[in-house]
Length: 334
Image (tube, rainbow, N blue to C red):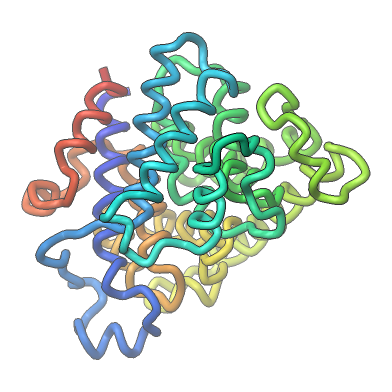
């Protein structure tokens, strides 16, 4: 595996910090402030947002769960709930966090609330998959554990099936790249995985969450999410057939405020520059959409493929929470 975990976590945080100042701005405004997008500087200080904060929360929860035995919903739910609740209470939770995550974490903090009752069922915001990379990086999990954990961690805050499917696909992409998948094959692998997973509702991970959806069966509930993801993969493939590296990537695959578009546009930026990781981050950050989440996903994909050496030392030395990121990366790379 080399340094894929360290590379992915560092890339995620660097993308988050790079896109933090450009979020909520259109491309002309960003260019007017910073000039050539290919020279976008890392801010000083290099502060992260809720994307990396929640990634670290999930990473700590996974480590606690693994220490308790084989990873299951039973072992992951208590530490994940505690970590998400701690994030909600944290005074550092002031970096424009998503409303859905805040609402769900407030409910998770209420004693006696079952986790299946916490998440808004209509939200498929990117908060579910912006933080899921650790599930793709933790060693020793089976494919079924990765899928279940990816969907479960998303379902704690986002009940829409597309949030679950996009989280699963994001973790799968990170794992595939860490294992050596070639970028040219990645969208085909994701499509195959989506078709195979379309009606595979894991009751041992998701319980009766589906009953809150109004769908007739758990399979029908989950299929809606995978169909959204398959549709956005169509858009991604179309964009890659005629890529425009100088255009706003959000024009091709979506602004990224919702889960499937965050996956697709983060992937698009990575696949535009698979061997130029810093350029991929800058392309995602200089966009009209959810720039910090798009850049953090692009960074996770690039870092999983290229390892820790992908990132400039002068950047990684000053990223906020550097020690925490390196500790998790070292544990998983070992």
